[in-house]
Length: 121
Image (cartoon, rainbow, N blue to C red; front, side):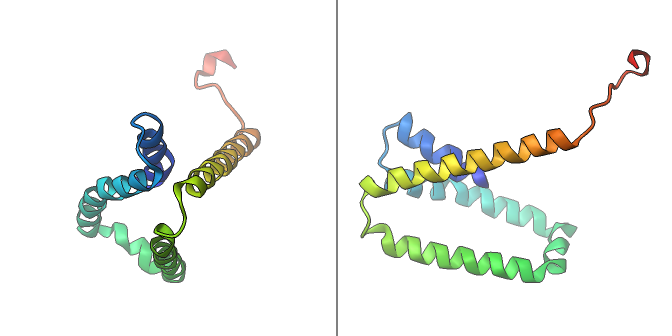
């Protein structure tokens, strides 16, 4: 599910189903786990993972960051209440949408749009 797990599934569970933010996060992980396992099994059968070995340092840094983030998040789960987590999630979603929107606008501004039909030129 990738980004959509955190940026689509969690807000959907909160806004449409009224789930608590901690429950929504946990449900997102449970829903994502089978998808990740199937994807891992599928990608390990072909040469898709070869790109990981060519970018080993980047993969290592990302993996360590993920492990550290998971550990810190698990430690804070019982300490920080939903009152603080929900606004933080909202801020992350706003920042992410602004960054994604900015990236798309830069790509569109830098590209030349050509007509697929030669007769219209």
